[in-house]
Image (cartoon, rainbow, N blue to C red; front, side, top):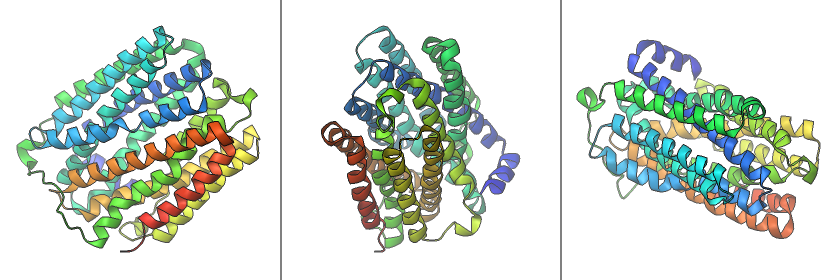
Length: 385
């Protein structure tokens, strides 16, 4: 997929500007991620609180995607993307208040606000890529999210992990605010998408064929397996290891695996159903996390987390490309927004259940139950109609 993306990047100036804005925005979101987790760990948050914070890093995107879809019917993609970045900037201000207060709800409110902005931007980003790129360039649109995540990983989570001990959370938030502000400026300088490539945004039809239903189900299936494990990750280590200096490398390994997964997807796999491959990857993901829970070796945990998220993001890349390929230009925004909302709903329910179970039967046992249930749900969601 990457060679196709590189050729499209060299050919289109608008794509380079969009990628630069995504780069800055992703740095800001990665730094905020580090701030929230280190603050919660420093306050010795309970497993249920950590799970709730994980849910708030995705659930408000459901409302955001609805709002973004509505806004696309009334205004240009560029302005919807800018509003999403401004919401991220507002989230930084709330996190600043959370640092000054002993109440964790400010931290959670800041996370929720930034996530609302990400949800608003998602249908606009999908529509923009589908509208502006030719059919043979669609893998480039699918890799836009991977590019954003690369910056989130390397320059956000990675740099935040290294700088946390040197600068502290206050400076990290200042850097995050600058990143979101820079993204807004870049998007403001981007020519309006509607001038040349305007097309009406239409809701999805009431009846979908089997291929479209499968395309909509893949990302929620991934959430059913992945969300509980990611929500419980900080609680899977022994109690003496649940400090920022031990947990942050795991979070970085997780993000690095999410970055590398899409780069391993060959162009020959694109456009196929791939159900067996995806279920196999999800089973491998669960096996890696269960090994972390039952084999408390910190050095092995880094490798297992990395491998797990390589597998999960192979599924993500196949699912996102399939979604863009299956729906036409008028329906891409609505399809991506619906898939995202279903993904968020499944992730929220399963993560909260995982946190509740961890408080009652322990993190390792809760993970076993959730992994088994999640894989069965994924198999059902991706079944052939």
